[in-house]
Image (cartoon, rainbow, N blue to C red; front, side, top):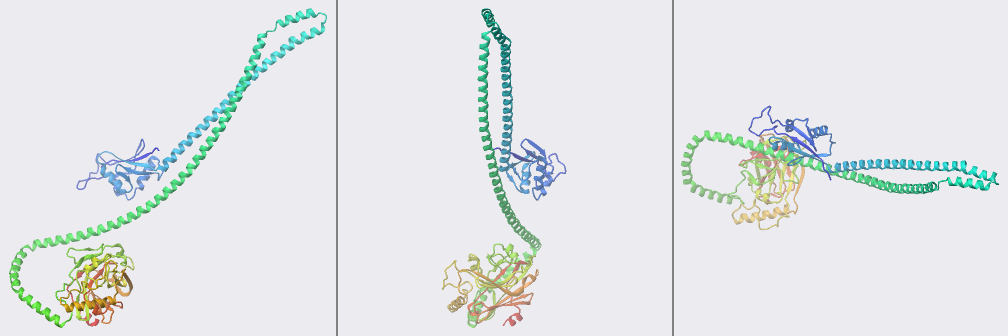
Length: 604
């Protein structure tokens, strides 16, 4: 089938490469030229406006006004592919170089078929007119021939009748009147009969027979012509019905294509939304990189200024290093003595425990980005930004070690602090970040397929979360102690840890599928501001249950009691957990801090 093309010509010169100056008027200014077959028309739109286009509607409208092409019957193409978006048109301009750049536009297949059917119908109608005119001319010619033959035959008959009346009848009357002069009359009759021309009479008879044959031949030709006309009429009728059926099928085909185009438009819109979300993520990454670059620049300038002081400090460090190496043996001896005394006075004391200092590198959500020193975590998830943390790991960040213990065995508290590094606007009701603790360590959470854990959190829009980890991905080993239980070195502490693990599994039986339950609380985390210090104090009761207390800048803001928590003897170390959500975009973990004494006293 024949295809018609529409072309869009773009002359280079509208843009220049980065780093070059742009001239106001140049000999190679960009012009737009529309091409339709052999026709080429200068576009009304200026090429400079292509750079700021947000859609191709103005380009399509300009092409339709210049070339008279119906809307929606064609697509824009250039030498590299279809032009669907303003970015594709800008790409064509950039790759054009000097001279002209042809961008072809191909008409849709269904409209080409419609035009082909219209041309065929016009040809059939023209043939109808020619056939009808031929039939009319044939009828006129046959009527003229028949009239001429009839007139000729009538004249001949009239001549014969007049001759008979003028010559034969008088002779007969003379014979009747003059019976006596028969011989004389016979001679007279013979003379008169001799005057008749026999050849002429034969010729007249032959002409009559020829005229009869011609008349019969004309009748046969008229019958054949009528028969042929009936056949042609039936063929024309069948062709017309076939064209009508083709038009109906074409209409159905066009409607199906329109539905496909509607679905394709929805897919394109969805892709555009995903692209915009990715662009926002890239913008956040760029902003973080710029901030890091600025901080690095400031630190570099400070390092250059302090280079002289560092030399002096380096000499002092060398001297102090010698003293430290001299005293290392004495410190090691004293530390061993202190650990032995602590183990005797506090059953279950764990010597050499490395408490958290930073965020864990891998135990985090896919959207969370950590700073180079692992102290600051920034969340970029779209679901977490709306306050949704159930069913996703967005905004999850975990400490790289356990919290410090404060109190006595069986009645101890775990405490950690964080600082709000950045907040952002969020939809109404989204709340803020969540804070709490986990029984599992950061390594155990990172190894879980869905990063699930057993823990308790509070925050959001006055909500509290009770988290349970699913264990369907691994088999439970009764002899293997979790990371938060395996810090003890002596056998007695290990046996106590195993007993505590049995009590923990009785209080929190393993589950095949993880679960996060949401309950009402009293703390609105969206009231936090940049620079606020949030303290989290968690204590398990002797008989089960736990209490989580929140402080902001040293002031108690909320206290929540969890009924579904193991007793204190079943829990050893707890890992700090933060969920960046709602208004809470970035947080900084503050290690090595102790809770205020009045919070501990009030908590007992």
